[in-house]
Length: 58
Image (cartoon, rainbow, N blue to C red; front, side):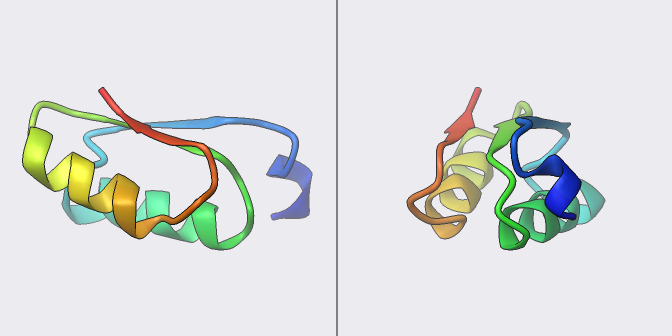
């Protein structure tokens, strides 16, 4: 997914399930990810798991 390396992905519903899987896949390819959702704890945990790249839970 090198074509997304200079973009920022916003993943809604990213705290769990398919959204979390998409966020992980994008982050693994080097895409900065914004995790958006209503499940604060899970979203914050996922953002921490994604590592030092810019990642936010809103």
